[in-house]
Image (cartoon, rainbow, N blue to C red; front, side):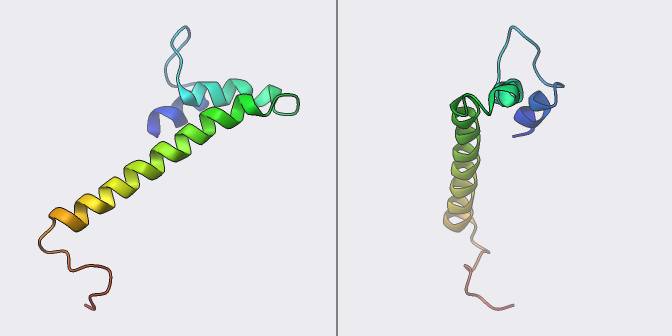
Length: 74
């Protein structure tokens, strides 16, 4: 996520290397003519972030013995 954000701002990896953030950044000028150029890398960023978050929540629920679950009152 950090790498995508930095590449979007132009501070990440430099050409000829590519990243999802730089793809989104370069596609801003084409958004009115070809929205799918921005749609696909943006979707991959969102799906990857969501998947990592869900896996992290599952690992906490599964492996943390002190975690009582979302319904335990303090």
